[in-house]
Image 1: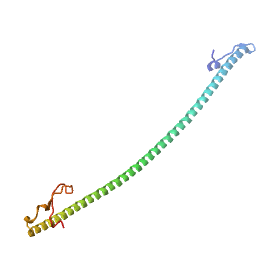
Image 2: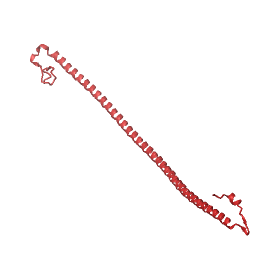
Image 3: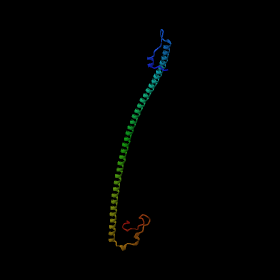
Length: 181
């Protein structure tokens, strides 16, 4: 039977001739002592459980703090890595743009040089054609003058040579006695 505080407060002992019944008082005190001992043991067990829970809680708080610090460090490292990657990407892009500008400039210079060479070749061709026309006209003029002084009938047939050895691509060439000298 469990003794409650009300039982203790309202406990009355039977009277004997010389006071209270000692056996009843001793039995009651033993019951109280047993109850108190079990309460103390229970309280000590609860205190020990509480201490273990507090230790676990402190351990969890420490782990939580370590995790928070680790997360913060990881976040800072990730930010640093991202910043480094962005900086490196900007450097790579700047370098690529600089190389592209150099290649573009070189291409423009090369193209300008080619246009100049083509222009020079066209001018040289026009100069050559003009010189060739002047030379041909000079030869025609010489031939016309030669015809004035030597009529056509006076020329023998052996003065016309057919050259097919490949020097003139199979075209026949008129050789006059005046131009052979």
